[in-house]
Image 1 (cartoon, rainbow, N blue to C red):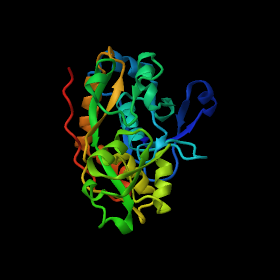
Image 2: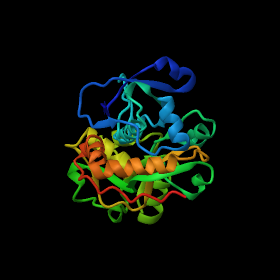
Image 3: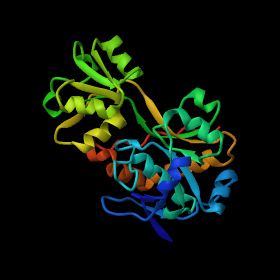
Length: 293
């Protein structure tokens, strides 16, 4: 029985030109969460097929610190979503070397599942009724919501959305997050193309807050914990789930059972602490899982 180290080093960048794929191999450095690589009992359908094949392809984000992020020049993406993927792979008996990570942006998550380009999508993928009409989604493995990232010096002045009137707030151009703080809380919207640009503006004191999903903001806070802090309770709800092809029999039960086991034995909490928890936020209780249809 082997142990899978959560934080991977990835190779195979040549594949990215045509498929966006990166193939996992080994691990190095940093805090790591040990995950047992052993086939779960009672696997059926596609879950059983993947276990027998011994390989899996997982679509992830690589531009969201703390969730799924690959830094310039780094060998590997890392984050909470990556660790959830490794927990699931380990329960299929699939080891480090046999996971292929594929960069998956928001617009291609459903097509990649429908086309069979990935077996799972774990990419800050909120569960919605509309998505469940065309793909399967199991979970949630994490519940977040819109929050605010501020400079440490401003954490007593800006404590939540009610403090945003006439405050310059940055988010991605055209986002519902930016529209919400403007329309409902009277903020002065400052749109940029990426969250990273917004964080730069915050650090340069050009804006006073950044807003989007709290999970994304925690990742940025973890990169600069002495100067940045996520404040206030979430003022929307996003339930992150694991996506799979809609007719993939056995997958919902396998994913749900594996997540529950990880929650019960502390692996989920350790994975959180090693990623989003680096921001200094307290580890939350795992969310209740939806029942499989």
